[in-house]
Amino acid sequence: MQDLPKKHNVAEDEASEKFIEEEITKHDQAKDNSKLEDSSDFHRYVLSAALAAGFLGLGASIMILGLALPTLAENLHKTINDLSLVLIVRGGGYVSGSFIAGALESKVDFYYLITISLLMMAVGMILTSMILNVASFYICTAISSIGMGGVETVANVLCLYLWGKKSEPVLQFLHFWFCFGHAITPFLAKPFLNEVLHNSSLHNNSSSAVTITSFQNITFIEDTTLPLVCVPYFVIAGFLMTVIIFLLPLKLFFSLNLTNTKHEHTIEQEETSYRYTMLFLIFLIYFFLMGGQVVLATFLYKFAISEKPGPAYTRDVASDLNAVLFFLVLIGQFFAIFWSQKFSPEKILAADFLGVGISAIAMLFYPLYSEAVPTLIWIAVAVLGFSQTSIYASMFLWANRYITINGSAAAVFIFGGSLGEMVLTIPVGLLIEDHVLSLLYFHCGYVFALILMYLVTLKFAKTKGERSLKHNPTELDKLQTQSNPKLDPLEQAKV
Image (cartoon, rainbow, N blue to C red; front, side, top):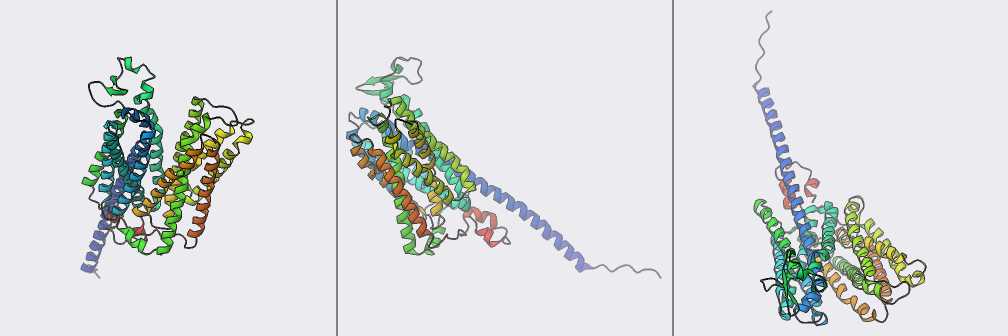
């Protein structure tokens, strides 16, 4: 019997075609999502690079004032004591800029905040070096310092906002460039400072890239009324303007809203008394941290050249001891970038505080071994510099595990550090001339007050435990998930 032809099944054909279309659509969506993810990550990396450049400029801007102050004072026909108020002006401006940026952080796009802050820094730096009037000098210093406070606050919070759980090595990376800015500024500024010029043959060097003339103790660039000290200030300001120009295309070509509104929701979920107590305790940590660091950095050279037990140090050797401290600070911050990928902030802080505590004790007992083992003070200073450098960023990251770090919280931390820098240096400054060992006593006291405050804060934080970091997605994450609603909701919530 002849076989009958099979009846064509239209329903099966339609189902097959639909299946093929769905597979093609899924494949196209996967490609699109991959492109979106690449674009999002690219934006994160580029913006983080801009923040790192801003931190480099911030470190240089902070360092230049201390180096150039004798020259600026001479240009203004004043002594350094006459301009001592500038440190208070800078500290007040720094804190003000931090609180202003913190208050605006949830209302204004991050791009505008960081750009305005960088612009204030650049303009203030340019004007500060050109001014020959004390009142104007204070005003320009205030303008630049407000920008500095804004940059530090915005950059720290924006890093946490962009990277979320992955922010630990990135934040350490930003602070490395801050330390690097500190380290290179003396080399940038030295050729243009009056005390160096007056002791060199630069005045008679016709092949010099910058020809100068002197008039009434002020060294000017030839054919201008600009003091030569303007050069390093202009270089730093030009670098800051370059960062601003670099940020511009990011805003133009990436239509992302970087207004950080998600923090308002997460803060509402935190117990008010717990949050405020944590902020106060961390405020005290930064108070002792930054105060102790600045005390040692400011007076270590004076300690080294003064009469004390042990061998007398020449100015060159004392400068080398200071250089060891700053070099190890830079190296320690560099290694912190990689350690933060392997260890939690709590473990890094434990190692840091152990190193800082041991070195502080070793320095405290310096009179006992100064004759027998004089090199031990060098080792103690090196260990201290290496250990203390990553505490600042690690505390930000640790605190972010227990409370929401928004602009206002960052401003509180920065205020604590700035206040410590101003207050804790006073007793050492008053006593070090007559009692040079007072530096070791006060510094050791500040270190152990810091460690005690951290232990108290750690104990208090454990009463609530770590908060969930599964916040609402940022604009960058929405780009990756908006075209694929089938993604795991937990993956969508990751920052």
